[in-house]
Length: 145
Image 1 (cartoon, rainbow, N blue to C red):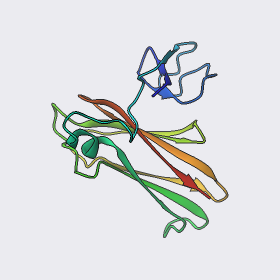
Image 2 (spheres, rainbow, N blue to C red):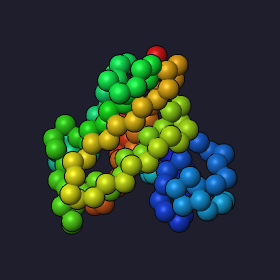
Image 3 (spheres, rainbow, N blue to C red):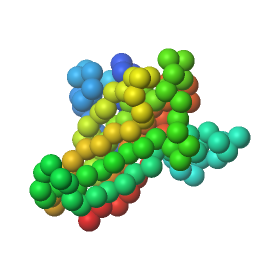
Image 4 (tube, rainbow, N blue to C red):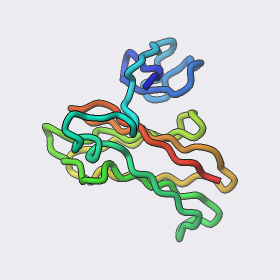
């Protein structure tokens, strides 16, 4: 799928008009790429690859810690992705309506899961891109109301 990729750090922007990378803070470093990430309709040769990589999103409208928020929970893959030094999920990036929200860096010592809390009233599409150090970037999205 088409995206705008930072030439310095590899961050993918879903917006076309971005001047400064929110991750590495460099300016004017984005280039458009047709294959910036894979989406759920990508068909891998083995079929198992997409089951390990496509982000699975869940939305809750209640939170025990903070009242009036929407909790976005992401688990990478239907099948648990390996988290080894040589093969792991390096990061999970969250967007709301194609605008960057948060980036969660992961190490091989934890599960490939991340959660963010959106303010009450947030609506539209939550998009997520996860990065596998071997198999690239994978995308999924869900509508919230």
